[in-house]
Length: 493
Image 1 (cartoon, rainbow, N blue to C red):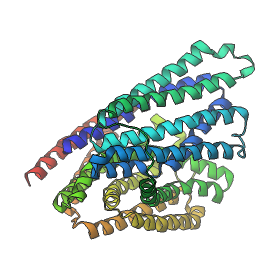
Image 2 (image 1 turned 180 degrees about the vertical axis):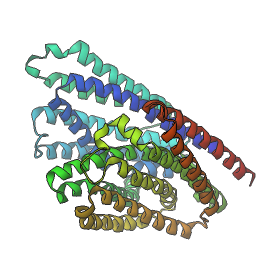
Image 3 (image 1 turned 90 degrees about the vertical axis):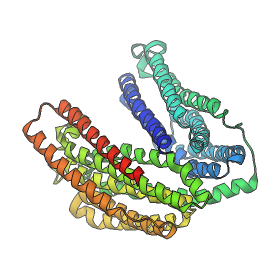
């Protein structure tokens, strides 16, 4: 079972890594082809549409996996009704996204409105694709999605390259009139998602027939159980993002802009790494469903225990690796200005606090998913309301004195509180014993490794890139060997 979970997780991480590389090529083509104003418009439309994708998701991906895992005989009915609910939500999104754009400066031009309408097709395809992926995940057949995603991203790059270099070369665009090529670029984006959805659809048909169904009672049930999760998720986004807004409001403009720039670099890296823990836990969802369905507390405790240990060991590796190489990472991704600055803090200082946040976030995921599967959605909602208020109040009080470092400290304290609350409520469901000895053992190992590598970097540094790549690979191998030994020891028990 754990091998299957590992393969599902690995396939999703691999697809994320490959698509990130493809995205770099895409950004390179677009930034060299489009004018600065046009690329800014492309970015704005992309982010604008993703807001509505988030609003329409309603946490239905995780809920769908739970529903299908608990009742595989009716998986067709579940998927069909989820797709119908998402179709209804998409119609609302198409209306509101276009209507709201008319009143937003920078979004109300003819080009922007047409692009938003075309991009809205992306929204429905993405939502339907998510329903299909939930079916595949519930049946532990998610590996194919990595292939389909990579293929669709490659098609997107090829189409945009064709538009930029063959169909409408930059040198032949009169007076920088990008209207038609820009529409084609947005359409290429939609086509790539369509290909991804079709490939997943053809593969998922092997599991069950996929179509639409309208069962009012069941759709109402889906909406009712999803809404608290969605609000909780929305609030988590608020308390994680609100500090950037508060920095711009509570500090004088020049200092606020510098704070946001220094603060955003580690935050962007954190957002990318956070998805890894989510991939692992979604791969675990069918197994959790089986445990709750059969009321098998022993199996649930085993899943919770091993998941906690896997996420703790992996997040502690990330913590040591990224804190150790934080200055290297900043120089590779950005430049020296993020380290040498007139601000009271720099991005290197923020990295340490940021990766403490990652550590507690990964550990919290275990308890969040247990509560989801135990249908304790209102507990999650109440906790997130409290944390959001706490986060906003403390940021308002202390950002003027301590700038962006306190914003991250507040986020860290919020994450520790969330971890504590979720652990407390999980204990009420499962008799989970916190593995103190395991944690202490790993902490000691990582302290020794950190001190040893710190000595190596200060005395035997070769070159920026070679240090980072070579020592990262060695650290990962040490982690893999040590964790394999721990896992084998766990299996014997």
